Amino acid sequence: MPRILLLNKWDLLDVPARAELADAFPHAIPVSARTGDGLKRLLEVLENMLLSTQQSQLLIPFEEDGPVLQ
Image (tube, rainbow, N blue to C red; front, side, top):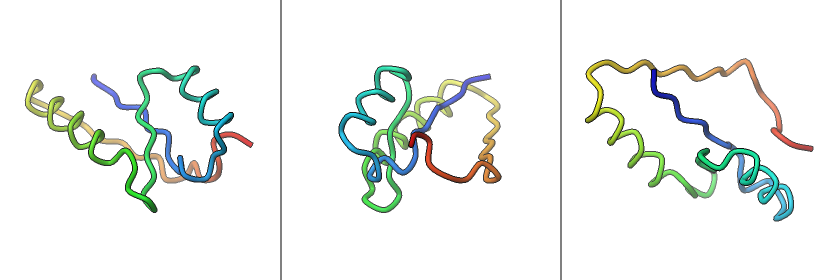
């Protein structure tokens, strides 16, 4: 099953933290709902996935709240 890894709240991270996460997760999409950064890329990836597959499932684990890296 295709998956997309999002790095949410990207706007809250400093430059070293962003670099560390980008190195650790090179295929992830950094996004910020507040600033809109990364949302265009996310929509492009979703569109490509939906056009290339016949069935998709979206799981958003809302119970995992909080910063990714402190």
